[in-house]
Each structure stands twice: as C-alpha cells, then as structure tokens.
Amino acid sequence: MSEHRLRIGINPISWANDDLPSLGGDTPLGTILEEGRQIGFEGFELGGKFPTEPKALGELLGRYGLALVSGWYSSQLAHRELAAEIEAIEPHVELLAQNGAKVLVYGEVAGSIQGRRVPLIERPRFHSDAQWQAYAEKLDGLAEFTASRGLRLAYHHHMGAYVEAPADVDRLMALTSPAVGLLFDAGHCYMGGGDPLTVLQKHIGRVCHVHFKDVRAPVVALARNNQWSFPDCIVNGTFTVPGDGDIDFAALLKVLVTHGYEGWLVVEAEQDPAVAPAYEYASLGYRTLRDLLTQATA
Image 1: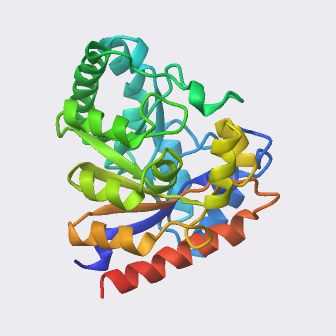
Image 2: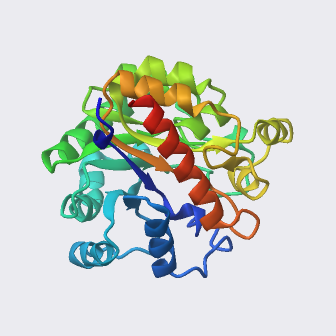
C-alpha cells in the first residue's frame, strides 16, 4: 500500500475544546490553522470556531492550504424520528460534501452525559432488543441518506453515550448494514473497557475513519476507580496524543495498512492546552504517526 492513501489530519480540540470552552476558548482560529499547517498536517476536522457556510469554509481552509477532513455531527436520532434527523443533518452534509469530505463523523448525543460532570456509569443505554433494533433501522436510513450525498456515515463510539463499550460496538455493527461505517477511536475504545487492537481487528471491515487518541493508563485507572465524568477525564489528563501514552499505535497501523484502509488518521486528544501546550503536543502526535506510517508502508 502506498503512503499517499493515508493522510494525517488533526482535530482542533488540542487548541480549543468545544465542550469545555474554558480550555483554549480564547485561541483564535487563525492561530489553530496556521500552527497545524506549520506542523505538517494535511487537513483539519471541524470545530466550533469554523464557518458553517460552505463557501466561507472552503475559502478559509484554502488560505492555509488545508483540506477538510470531516466534521462531528451531534445527532438526536435515538430520541427522534428519521425524517426529522434527515432534515436536521442536511446543512452539515452540504457543508462537508461541498468541501471535499468523504465521511461524516456521527456522534449520538441524545441522552449523552459526555459534556456533563456526571459519572460515566450513568450514561444512557438501550434496555431491550426492540430498542436496539429500532435504533439500528433508523441509523441505516440516515446512512443511506448521507451516502446519497457522497458521505459515508462514520459512527463514533464515545464515552458517556449509548454506544461506548466494545459490546455496544459489536451489537451496533451486527444490527446495521454496511452503509453504517465505524469511526475507530483508540482512546475511547481503551477508556470504554476494550483492547484497541482486538476491537480494530474485529471490525476492520467497517472502519471508514480513524481517531488516534492515546491514553495515560494510570489516569484511566483513577477515572474508573473514582467514577469520573468525561469532563473530569479531560481536565485530569486521561487523554493525550500518540507517542505520549500507553496505546501501541504501530500495531493498530499495521492492521489498517494490511487491510487496505484508505483515509485519514486524525490526531485527537482532549487536554487542557495550558497544561499540555497545543503546538508541542500536536507536533509530537504528528511526528509519531508520520514515522510509524513510514515504517508501516515501507
């Protein structure tokens, strides 16, 4: 596999956190884009500071020579009907499609506690086969809609949401059609109780987008033992960039390359930039993935 089929991008959360605006909220978007470009990233995922009008977004990224990787969409599909969700998601679909993105990062936020200081154990759950099936059917319908606009739906398993643990991912993939792709997030996988390599190997056929988030294993243990919320995890340093934590990204990258994954590797780490300076840590994440990618594709 040639290296050009895998591109390294980044999420702006290293500089400014949308869920916790106190973390880097005063950092100008221009600073974020310029520093990302200087480090060597080819593209950015969207954040709350980015334009939501397609032409304005394209012009902004063009000024920095950056591509649009994708963008998170906060869905309420678990609690509302498919037709309403299609109507709600359409502007975001157009924003991505008109700027060259190929995947849509789907985040289920109905009932989610990911932005609240509530113990993660209190996250929402589907309690019956019927609830799982109804959700899967609606998700299939939404994925067919985004596909009709040129975007693969990339489902983001996420702490504090309905689909968090490896068992949740297994069930969702079993109940949905291949139209529903999987966003594999190494950090959320580990924090959710899974072994990232095992989960990636099991679902590699559905993976259409990748977030390479690292974890500090001792802090994960503290988070579990003390029943932290997701914001608690962020401010206490649970997550970091590849090269600074305990996940074996060389092994994960080998699986992706061997199975012919084509797409983005996105550096993402929810941290306080006052503690973990964004430029320094984003640079470490980039260098780590660049070097691993060179080795894996040699």
